[in-house]
Image (tube, rainbow, N blue to C red; front, side):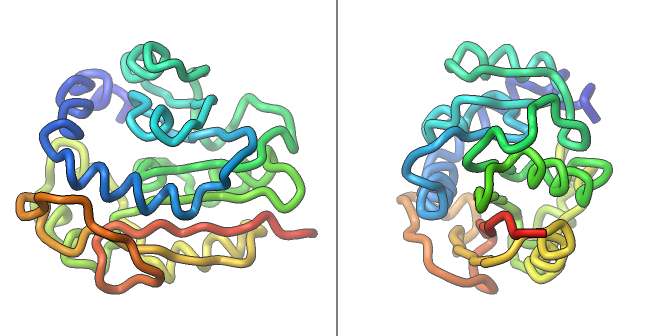
Length: 208
């Protein structure tokens, strides 16, 4: 998996320029769920395409090639994976996982680790391509260089996984209501799921 992202790092990064309004629409939806302040970590930070504009200062990813890009964008990066985060417990106000959860080997362990490094009542923000949406069906059929290795989540499935990992107060926002090649302006996100292809699921660290 890491080799794919290492090999196609420029192709990955340039996708966001070629699909500018899709990217900006996703950023807008994530910003609605993101805390306005606090220390944040992005798991699967990649090239820093999301961390940089969202003001997330810390990022971890298994791909060294991608982290080289993220570091140049000012992100404090570490090589590693979400199943074993090299950070102290209760050290972040929020954790973001944008698209990356569909590529990990053990999603539950990643969520459990995210909960561990979050402070009391810290927030997790997860962006996914909804498996049950038109976009999820498109990507599963297309089998792109990256998504052919992905496990797509449905929103209800992800919500259940979050609750199992010790999160509560779940909320959802959605965007990308048209085919990617038909989006020529920034789309306005709305609450819920079921219509948009990209869904942002957020939740709070529960007490145990």
